[in-house]
Image 1 (cartoon, rainbow, N blue to C red):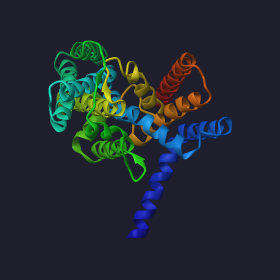
Image 2 (image 1 turned 45 degrees about the vertical axis):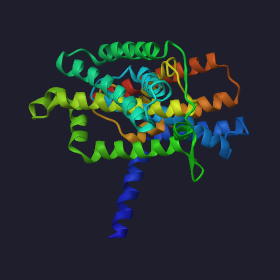
Image 3 (image 1 turned 60 degrees about the vertical axis):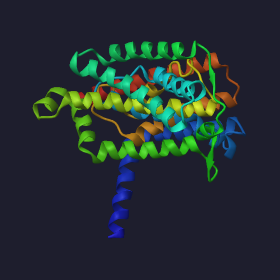
Image 4 (image 1 turned 135 degrees about the horizontal axis):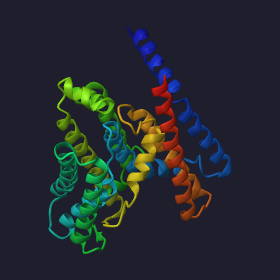
Length: 325
């Protein structure tokens, strides 16, 4: 029995490597190059720093990939990160809320944003691009209004430890991310709703005719995306000791890039959490390496834009080849 289980897992891992050989090879080559380019890249301190830095993008990518898998997108993620962090900070610092209730309200702000996007997409048929673009502006504006456009300092040590603490030498944000990665993976692969997400993304009309409640799937995905972004925003606020309304501007594009690099098709219907996390690692390692090499932030934006363009180009070529076959 144990031998069969081990063989099954080995076969699954081999299949995964074959399917993702290009991005895995790219990640390995990138790491090798950076290890020679900078003596600090493979140090324990830098690796922990890298994992902590990519934790936010990893959580955002979990939500973004589900939105892309149903044929949509979520442009509001960065603004929701800012909103949830500022809401939590304001409630703790100015309203005197306890930490659990403040965190709950911060998470609720993200859920509400996701619910609005999902309702407009599902019932009014507003394209996800437009609906989430509108919510992006509303959430960002609300964050500025709540804080009067100023950072809100958090001096409650118990809350800040949620973002800067360690367990067995591992940063807490990394642990949160690992748990969420496992939960989302199980959700997509082991639940009925997870199967529905793939079905809706693969062929929306066929899913509807087969009895799937497409509206419920669309709303669920956007609510989950909003929740994950809010969670990331609260952890980020704890790491920065403050809620900052201007934070996370454009971070949703990093989540798109990571998703597409990880093989999540922009046409919907395909993608896996494990592959998307490789995309997150590529984006994170690239940015970390550029920082170690003292590359100016302006040039980092140029490089990141090129990576996104390459990722989208490969996705379109891959989709076109699949259609021809």
